[in-house]
Length: 205
Image 1 (cartoon, rainbow, N blue to C red):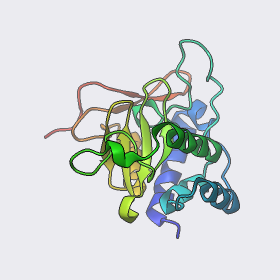
Image 2 (image 1 turned 45 degrees about the vertical axis):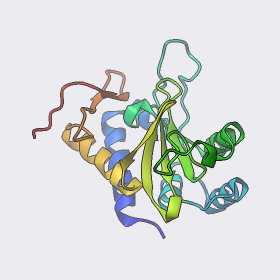
Image 3 (image 1 turned 90 degrees about the vertical axis):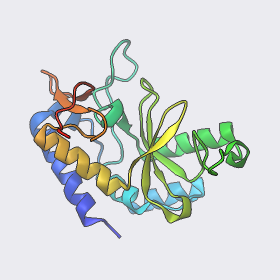
Image 4 (image 1 turned 90 degrees about the horizontal axis):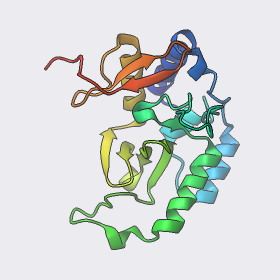
């Protein structure tokens, strides 16, 4: 089932990027097919996150022409915390890599029964090799929460992908901080690249 609010937020983000950050907009890939999504998650052995499927049916990740160039952040790293939307192939590679390295998470769970760094029910859909930050759908107990994690710890960033994309769309259109508890302001460079500035919050309260 496709989430109508998520589709609307994705449309808003696309339109904003096309008008205000065309260089970042051009990194968006064409959509994935339903069959491609189903085949990929069958190989991974995890359920298809419905919200993530909606996102992939619009854009199968991004292609960044700047990757590999020294001392330059890729122009496709326009999601919060300078992360880049991953393609299905990259999602599968990321998942397989974590499974091979980390193994059984139960051995490393904390007192609350939650792994502090990664869990097999997390499906990463955006990441940054520069900052080490990842965004993932947390499917434990059928959940839809979006987790933010880096090389040290993880935390729940948003209650769902629709909430996250709605927050991004609102931040882009208003110029206000993406978060209430920390400043994360959208900025566009002269060459049309969207990035995020960590500085004093524009939000009151």
